[in-house]
Length: 295
Ligand SMILES: [Mg+2]
Image (tube, rainbow, N blue to C red; front, side, top):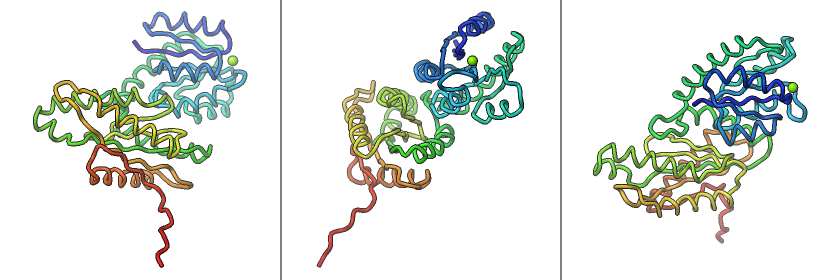
């Protein structure tokens, strides 16, 4: 069942919307302010969000742009609802990432029509962004979110780590058990990664048996702990019909002014070193330390 999140500081308005939407067979969630809305997005991943603009504390425009920076927010359909009808408000709302802008007072049939548009949009976005085999975000989502995440790290001056993870000797699984066995492993592996990642992280199937993990607000030390814990977790896991597997991981920490191409190239180079070094290990790409002075 698709989930709709209603965000409005007025309980009466949330109530009216709930009545309108309850006929549509949707699961309805409510939030009375911007912070609660962001928490609900993280916790419940609603597909459709009806968002009031004028709210105390965090306004709807700010909430909207923050939602867009989260994994569930990538494919959510956001309908802004505001008493302000002027063009500048509409433009501002749409530019913060809203898909539609409706004005109050509204007619129930207009909300319902917009909701149906939203349901269709969400279905096609999900199939576009999701890796169909594992159900987690895929390569296209990575391409869409990677640049945004880097820009945000630079802007807020918070560290960001990129880990590229490759399942060791995956070809053997496919060769021995056929592609069905390989697919099963990839699905289970994606679940292990999902369980390990924090809410603020983003993780993707990058292609084949390669996965990427963007660890937000994480420096070298944090990335070392997190990736080592994941490496051990995989090594201990029993994959049905296959047994134990290992991963090689390459990690790079975003440097000042660095772009995504450079960051992913460094993580990739580290991954190759991990493979060359015997697999089941993590390598970090660090800026060159000053080399020892040789007399
Ligand atoms: Mg309001």
